[in-house]
Length: 508
Image (tube, rainbow, N blue to C red; front, side, top):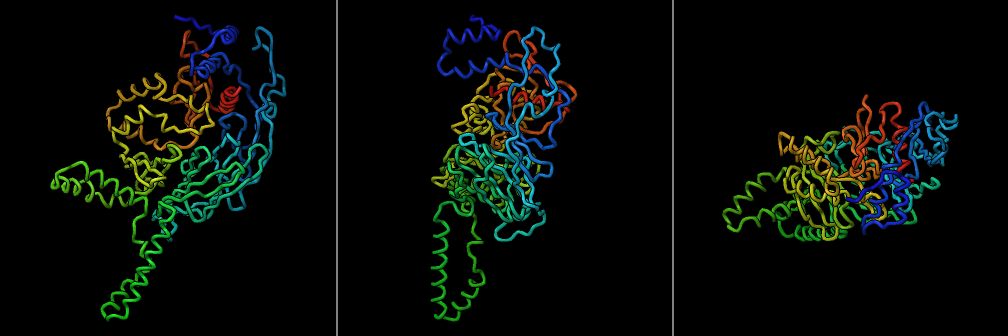
């Protein structure tokens, strides 16, 4: 068995004289973080009175907002500001400047994003690391009892104005804006927006439309297509021209007889025939369900019985489904989550029945459709979880986020939870509730690499979400020999400083 020294000097020497196996160079380099760990906490640091959002995944920028949610303030880490060469550095006190926030971060700029009646959505931020663009959102207050007009879904709130701002983070220049009026986009934890490479998907819950935008290198937000009422670009043109033909045909028949005249008056009382149509995406979904049930049986009698039980009996339930959430699987496929109206606007949608579908944007077809408690979908999720955690091609470091499909320790942990579950169906439903994944919800920090460190994921994990503070310190223990405690974080008032260390050290 090859002995790997835990001494950092020995590891540097080993790196000079040996070459890692093909495809393992990044994993080999990440083992250096077993030696480069947070070892000192600076207390009572005077921080600006801002709402800190997060670091960008490459560690280059710290995003924060003013307390009135009107301004964006961006900082850049200044890296090391103090060093010690003695054998016992813990005996030395840090200089006074090391206890100031500006000794760790430099403010780059402060930009006003929101107007007088708008507020910055503090839970929303997406980063495009290829161009170092940042996407932010501002909005007015929600109107919960807004009437459903113009094809809006009854029961979904309305926001008078939602504005997406595209900024160049290097200098804070606003490159472009995209405004949605009297609409509703779920901006909490990026749930209603997904960024993949240069493609941006924005889900309008109120009008059940998936807007696909492209972010150009010039910084322009270009509308590519809208998926919802129509699926193909010429669907609206075809339906409008067909409606005009029907209308002109009806007018020609008005002079033929009194019966026809009365019949035409009835049709004229419904001038917007398209309003009675199901949306394009809903028709694709119903067709896929129908064809799947049709092909399951070869006998006509059994086929009709199955359709009656599985399709026609639940027809209205399928019609009432709305789009909750969307993510890209690649540049051609979307993973779409459907559910009830109540679940779409609820803060906790886990208790509502839901379905997920794979949609091909090129062919406008539904490729697959599952209920969120399906064992078949769970097996795909367990074996190919990384395919759901789709990352941009330029974010290579995101390919090393631990999951149960690429890390044996994460898989053992998942199977342990599964074995302890009293209800298998509820366990599957709970695990699949996270699909589709929210965009940029995982941290690529090596300290969350489960092949390097062991920690309590109930207290801290790579997932970007709020957690309840605890009095117990969060311990990071070496996964490899000698399995020792490398460092720990004390949550509470000092949690921000600890998280800063985790994020800063991952990039250097």
